[in-house]
Image (cartoon, rainbow, N blue to C red; front, side):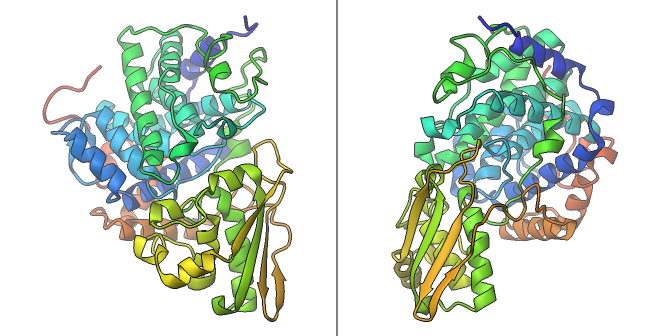
Length: 459
């Protein structure tokens, strides 16, 4: 048995977390996480995955708002639909081997409306979810991707349970039960990348977190060692079993929120393609590359990334999100890789299809602890010579090259235009970036009253 009561210790961390405990330099991370997630959620609102899910669930009202439209649903369904929309374009932020905000923010928003929470309470919940997520990530030396797990769904159900437990004010024992309930709802397969089921993973994890905290508050129990037991969650999802079940809990000590932060995506494609996209776009703009002159493109990425970018000849936008060939063709032909390129029509264009055939991906077995190559590289051969990006070791929008406030606003406003959002972009962005000053969640533009018009808020 483990010498550390990890599940109970994390429950105590969640129950004891106060606003004053949050690191000052982590507040901007949380604000950006909320703002970016809401933006990409509204951009993805009309995608098929959330649309079909909404049609199937057919919510008839409730305590939470769907996609800032005024339509309402119960908090569980709202978290599920909104979370699926947040990940539908694969444009949401990246950290901790996964996509934390696409799970945490929809779950928190749904429960915040049910409870009438303040902005500070929502931010504290995000910090709790992020730190629990990070604590679990650090205990496994191997990326779950290699075992076929999609970490967003696998970690996300527990992270969302932590966030909702904090928001609901669960005591330490209840919070530990919520984590155990969340752990048994962990799910998500890499094999489903490039289909509607990938964003479903994020939505389902958000739903699981809301359900776990509500069940635990009502007395529903889980094993007090569900995470660290020899047959518990850590063992189940680990690739090689190289897990640490004995180290003391470090949630909030030091804060991973300020160390790992968030990578805000500039392109709505798999994050594994982003360094190469940065490199290709630099080559295109620095050398005015003509796609007609390109004889071949060679891209070096990690073997794990090459496996996730599995679609060499995509035929629709969903498949194209997981295609290095498409990313390179889009950058060369359009000189960008934005939401407007992620359409079935653009993917099927003859010039795009032809150029993708000239792109070769070369796996690199030198990987860091997160499973990425130590560096990526792009080489473009033309009749005039070979253009080389050199080693690409960082990514635009990453913790060491963060987007400026203007860039974040520009992305947000573009997302709301793309999603034909009903809510005004400027006031909503400003409110999200000042979330800690919001006395009540209903003060966010596009959200309705906190309490359901159809009944009492559930305990």
